[in-house]
Length: 287
Image 1 (cartoon, rainbow, N blue to C red):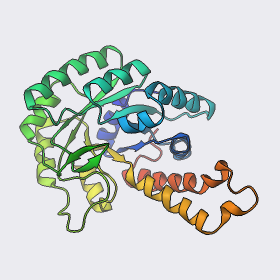
Image 2: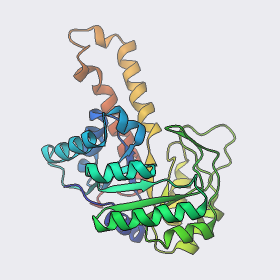
Image 3: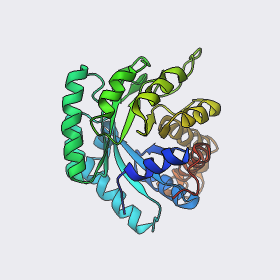
């Protein structure tokens, strides 16, 4: 059964580990993440961007697939289905579709409008038993056309949004979506610490988890990060394994062109990446 992300993140914060949000892009992604979470007895959050939702023909399709797969695979660990970087309109679509968690990204609004819209969505989400994430300070890089330069959030603005009753807060601390460029200066732990001091027990979220060095990840968790988002790294693993399969001519052997065989190496590569991240985040055995 799918659950809200709230309880799993409260436990993560108290236990000084982080729950991974792994974005899903199709059936193979979903199956690989769920099976790995079950194998490692780790709670997990399945993230869906608006672009991925559109690609999979809509949030209703995604929710139906995830719920059916969770049941048919006999998954026993907590699983949250979460909208990633949702617009105001997208949040309502996911609520209607049956998601158990949403993220409202109001970081591009001025703080007053961000507060107003976040407050409204907090009330709606909590009435329905959903968890909600908000963002302060644009996350760097590009994701689904949302571009940020890796800004650092204002700790006072973080407190203002946290006080609205959101269940988790994504705060920009120099992190970037996608591949990290040469010369990236690293995470701003001074900013993260200042935010933690203002927001207290609020679970903090680190976006752009691909490519951040392991020591920085561990330090971020120690400073209050309880949810870490991973997307690009799984995509790169999938693409690399699929390329090797084709370049080795495996698709030309027998029925190697069958998508079940063609996509299998990529699916296994996703599993390996998810396992590596869950071990790094410390969530193994925490379900």
